[in-house]
Image (tube, rainbow, N blue to C red; front, side, top):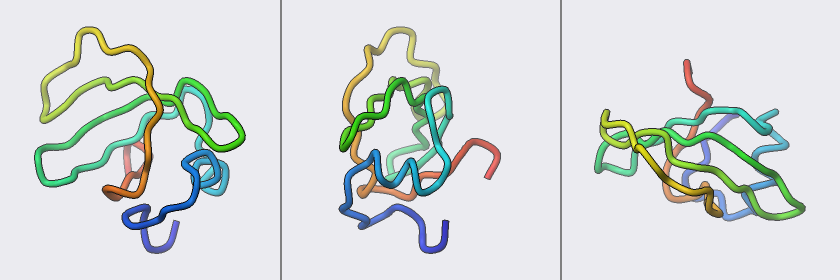
Amino acid sequence: MIGGTRHDHRHAADICRENGWGVGTRLIGDAGLGATVICITALGTEVMLARMISHDGDPVVYCGEQAWRLGARDWCRIGC
């Protein structure tokens, strides 16, 4: 993706589809408080559901899935 996801206020599901990110894709992004890793669990028409895997290097033991926006930080697939 050219330009990243920061400040992209389109629906998260549209951004995911444009980038080829689907269920099971792990994304990493940092909003200045440490890197967060999420795993996409569902894509709807507009909404992306994901669960947090880790934050600032620490694993998140239990975190239910929730809707995520992608415009607050630049997200990329793990390994970017």
